[in-house]
Length: 175
Image (cartoon, rainbow, N blue to C red; front, side, top):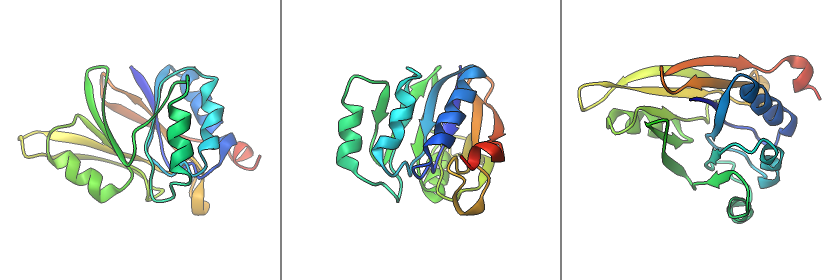
């Protein structure tokens, strides 16, 4: 199963919409959003794709009440609060906004994959865990292209745990 992992959209609807559309064209069957959506209305552009969207809030959380209400309507969006533990394709996945919290969760060995955001920088690591193995830790950067960072997301294959960075073309960024 392929998934689109992104974070820090900061209300940039065209970038978020483009990224998810492209990821679906490459076979993504779900979206994992690691926080800082900001306005819940930003997520409306994803409903049309009719694939599961798992979202948490970050430090720029916007209207959490409306985000909760949106997720309770008949649509594919699941709002999990400040973090989430989910299972997709038999992989245990933890979503959190903050990298330091993500690193700690990866070290537990309870998860196959831990995803975070906040720094606006793409990062990959395999964290040694207390069970004697390693846990994949990924940060997709910022899909919103915040603070002059490139607008990026990850296309992940949950079967192989391979992660590919995708950057949004500048022509889309400036729409």
